[in-house]
Image (tube, rainbow, N blue to C red; front, top):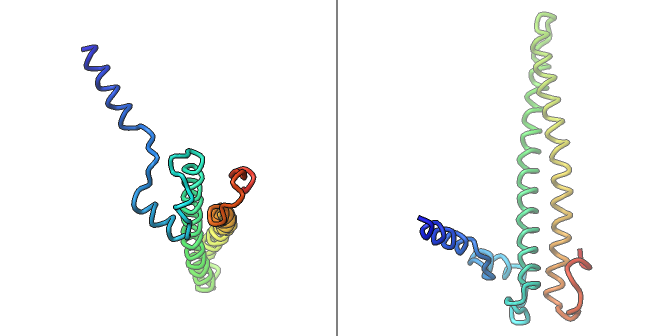
Length: 150
């Protein structure tokens, strides 16, 4: 029993080991940034970490931008629907319709308020990613670290 537990734990730990290789889609993404891989030593953990940082910042940028676009579109839709409900309820008996319309408008404004910081964050990540990409394109100042760039 004890031997089985030890064997299973060793197998489990070996499956979550750290590997310094890139997947095919990550290599395609890095090559789309026109980074010269000839001057990069992938066995160096700092270079590997920096390239992973570029991929992480790009993924975060794309996610923030996509969510921002979805929320902006949803904001336009709910605000328009709310205005239509408000303009459709003219009688005093339709106060409930006006309340519902105001809730839709408020929801649309809140969605727009959430999407703006997402777009700002997306642009910030893009600038950070571009600084790292330029570092690897030029590769003349070898002593510079990622902490100095970002």
